[in-house]
Amino acid sequence: MTSASDTPGAFSRLLVVLLTMAAVTLLGPADDARAQELSPADKNLIVNVKLAGLWEMPAGMWAQERGKSKRTREVGRTLMIDHGRLDTATHGIADRFGITLPTEPSDQQSAWLGEMKAARDDTEFDRIFANRLRYAHGVLFPIIAQVRAGTRNDVVRDYATTANQAVLRHMTLLESTGVVDQSLMPEAPVPQSNSANSAMDVGFGDFALGLLLAVVLGGGLFFAIRTLRSKNTRTRKRAAAAEPELVPSAPGEINV
Image (cartoon, rainbow, N blue to C red; front, side, top):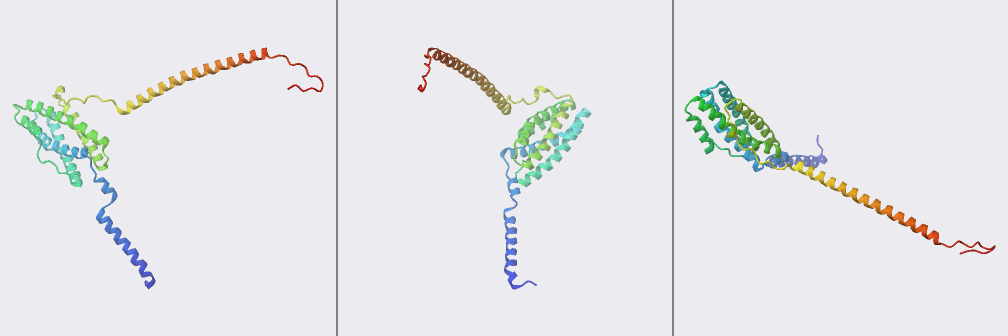
């Protein structure tokens, strides 16, 4: 049985527990609050992956129906399945972070679907399918890579890793159809000096220059010291030669 003296302490402990529960409910865990912070690049990636699925899933379905080659039909099936799974992940992450997703493909993507639909025959369909999708994947690939490399959000990083693997696989599969025209691929970005390598180059250049200066200065200092010592030696010799001989002291005398 709780004594009267224990009642204030028990009440205080209960009050602390209730206040803690209320704070957690209102504010949420600190880690979850930090996880809600997405950069514009993070959000852009999620929207772009959704847009990709809006036209690539229908394209994959059409490839299974109209593809002339067996390989085109196989690639279409894989793309449709992969983008279906990726679409599920996209909606999950969008719901978690409150991102509004598009419901229709872009004008460019709609135009590509229109080209496939208007293909004169199945051979032309294969060519349009492979080239348009290879181009689109080539545009999306570096966007994913940049987010994967720089995002501060663990959830987005995992999502980007999954998307990166899917897009790389799709580019490889589309190229395996044998009808991809490399001249129609997106242009590679203009090479930029790698900041890490540049820093290493600059550091090595500074080190080499410093080493050269140290050698020159050290050699000059050594030569100066050697010359000074030689000059001092000659001066001492001349002084010794000019100094008169001491007269022997007589008994009892002290020469000063």
